Amino acid sequence: MKNNIITIPHWLDNIIYDEFKAIYEPRPAEVVYNPDQSFDFVRLYLGTYFPRSYAEAYGITTQILSIEGFLNRVVELEEINLLDFCCGTGGEIIGTIVALQSKLPNLKRVNVDAFDANVEAIRILHHLIPSVNNAPEMKVEININPQCIFIESEQEIQDIVNLLNVQYHFIMSFKAINEFIQHQTFKTNAYELIASYLLPLLSQHGVFIMSDVATKLNDSAMFYPQMMNVGLNNYIKKTSLYKSIIPASCFIHEGICTGCYMQDTFYINHRKKSRDISKVAYRVLCKSKFATELLNNRQTNSCRATNQFADKNSPYIS
Ligand SMILES: C[S@@+](CC[C@H](N)C(=O)[O-])C[C@H]1O[C@@H](n2cnc3c(N)ncnc32)[C@H](O)[C@@H]1O
Image 1 (tube, protein in one colour):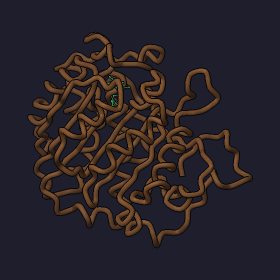
Image 2 (tube, rainbow, N blue to C red; image 1 turned 135 degrees about the vertical axis):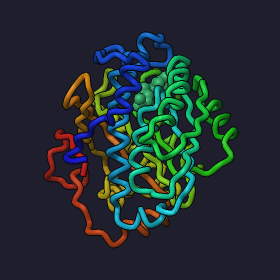
Image 3 (cartoon, protein in one colour; image 1 turned 180 degrees about the vertical axis):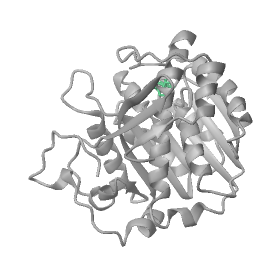
Image 4 (cartoon, rainbow, N blue to C red; image 1 turned 90 degrees about the horizontal axis):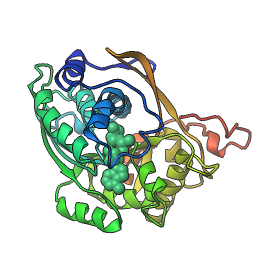
């Protein structure tokens, strides 16, 4: 991966466009809310947005693996547990696993718990994984348990958490929490609430990736990344149990942060499009002890959010 340019592997390109007849057709106005989308729309999602989620997760996981000291802690693992909250068709699951298998020589199996409201997306994911497992390029076996659940209150999140009795090396949510905010599912900050339920499921050296769209909220001057930062910083301050490792500047500043507009851009190549663009905002959190082990001796990154001279209207990731 160079300059965030990621090419979908040819075997995965063949699976989605030949085997699953996925369609590339961006539909920005329709993709904003997805629990009830039809099979035809989900096929379009698979051809258009799945590759983007693959690339975002591949890029973020590659960044995590390149943090000095991280790989040492996971390199011996033969089995990894992964939880995907609002998985859709699961592009981020495959992107994470492909990045992991390139650096973890002993990795044999990834156990995935994945939840989503959209029954068609869950169905596609259920059928996609055997094809991925059959690809000769996949050295790791994916053992997935995709479950269809519409979360309409905190109760369903509690139900999910109560169902799970393992600790996860990877917990993630990609481009989904904004949909809860649009529908005002919760009375409080959705990023904080969801993080508060999922973070306790992290293993000792586990990572929690929260990623979402970088656009503005409906009828508001606020951007989703600002809301994510407010929510996560609040929770981090309240509990002191977790800290950020990406962006590295958050590790230093999250306790005093007054908010920012972080954003990163990925460029994705596949047979239907070259340099497709995806802009997202993400934070990666770990247990405080592990984050401190990884980042304590690192050079302090400057942070635009706390710099009074910075242009706060210019999106960035540091
Ligand atoms: C834009 S898609 C992202 C899917 C996947 N994470 C990805 O990056 O490709 C958002 C997903 O969130 C799910 N979602 C939205 N609101 C939900 C809810 N209340 N309960 C469960 N899933 C929900 C949708 O069904 C959809 O699959």
